[in-house]
Image (spheres, rainbow over the protein chains, first blue to last red):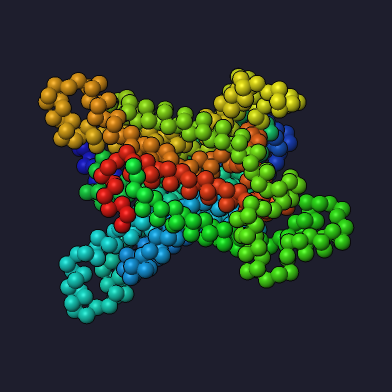
Amino acid sequence: MKRLNRRTAAAIGSAAMLAIVLAIYIGGAMIPDSALQADFSQRGLAPSATHLFGTDFLGRDMFARTVKGLSLSLAVGAAASAMAAIIALAVGVAAAMGRSAVDHAANWFVDLFMSVPHTVLIILIAIALDRGAAGMMLGIALTHWTGLARVIRGEVLQIRAQQYITASRGFGKGSLWIARRHILPHVAPQFLIGLVLLFPHAIMHESGLTFLGFGLPPEQPAIGIILSESMKYISSGMVWLAVFPGLSLAALVLLIDRLGNTARRLFEPREAQL
Amino acid sequence: MANLKSVTIYILRGLTLLLAVSLLSFVLASASPISPETRYRLSHPGVSDENVEKMREYWGIDEPPAERYLGWLDGILRGEWGTSTSYRQPVLDVIGVRFKASLALMMSAWALSGIFGFSAGCFMAVFRDRWPDRIVRRICLFMCSIPTFWIGLVFLAVFAAALGWFPFGLAAPPGVPPEAVTLGQRIHHLILPALTLSFLSFANLALHTREKLADVYASDYVLFARARGEGEARILFRHGIRNAMIPAVVMQFGSFAELFGGSVFAETIFSYPGLGAAAAAAGTGASDIPLFLGIVMFSSCFVFIGNLIANILTQAIDPRTREGAAA
């Protein structure tokens, strides 16, 4: 077989990773409720061929619950990172294009959201919105836009110094027109990659917050719920209740992180050597 | 020494941020759909209507929000942070006791991740792009993807449940009066939560140090040192570690926010009686709002002090950052 060049390999790799992520999401959404039902004749079974991840204290199949949980995490993570990325884009572009007062104000807000530990701030926002998925998503979004906003600001500042921008201004184009026609298209790849790389953080925070009881409600088989339920059974040796769902979550986080970094190599071959 | 003017500006900026944090958190806490009255009734079952009326007056619930905020802020500045509804003690007392326990945990985790993370980073850089580097880097990248609370659960399952080497939680054996707890017992209870808490920052610091040190190895002055005939060990200690140390130390001091956030999980899992577990508990159930707001303010100060030290250290260690730092 002919050796693939690195660009083709990266493209195939990211397509495959994207396919796995989508498969987990769709698979989880399609799991029928019957597969998540309690079956008291199957309580506390260790992992086997019929129950890949074993069953819990109510006889529920842990593999089905884990896939469902990952799918929930993906949905919450997607919403939260999309919100965070949009805030980052708005603030980043405004800071770079606006007057210096706007830049200072944006910088100050970045510092403000970095001065409270994220976990504490997310809990506070979750309490303010009476817990549940909406509060948690907003909390994650509000605490995670800062890094990407700085990246986008820097990127826009660099583009703004280019000669074609000066030329455009010379032709009498306004700031908004330049932002839309010249700057946004250049920032788009950064934005998308930033969004994908926010995903893992969002998922980890989602599961953590749900674990503490501030996120998804206990009826949902979210990974955080599964793990907090497992705590009571760890001492009696049912370690599979914690091990496999957690490992799956870590694998998913790692996969999305890889996806983001591979995509960056595709879009920006120069900046992402290594 | 550090530039006094830039430090002063930094502190002033930090104070405006803390003021903004107080406003933001107060607004958020007031936005909570559960009214303070309901909360009070929930946390004090069987309380008389008369007492509820007294509390309404004491808290100034019927006053306009701006006045309530100023009253609360005034209390914060005078050191009267209100009364915790779950502990029935002044908030500052609760925070003081809890923070002492947390500090022991956070500082041991901090030191652990600092020493071992830096060493692992140096190890990877020395073997850069060869198999030991690849293996350790893979492990570190995987560690970055593991949520703190899950690794805590795994430690609990393996070292406490299966092997029985460490206790299941708490800061001391149950039933022993506080003054009779030995230092050995305390350390024994501290090890698992500290390992859990250091897990993530260990990997972050190791990867960060590896990149910095790899840059040093690629530099001209290391090439020149090789040409002079300096050995690998000499290059590592004379050129590598000296240059990689600054960003590592700064990064460790800048990670107080993650440290505190991680302690919420590590302490909750190991039922460790620290401030992080108190924060998680204050948010659940009827929500102990006075305590939670106190923890928000306190943890923000904690983060601010870490960043301030990082800032001063950068200037003190690295003369290049001093020029124009006041700008």
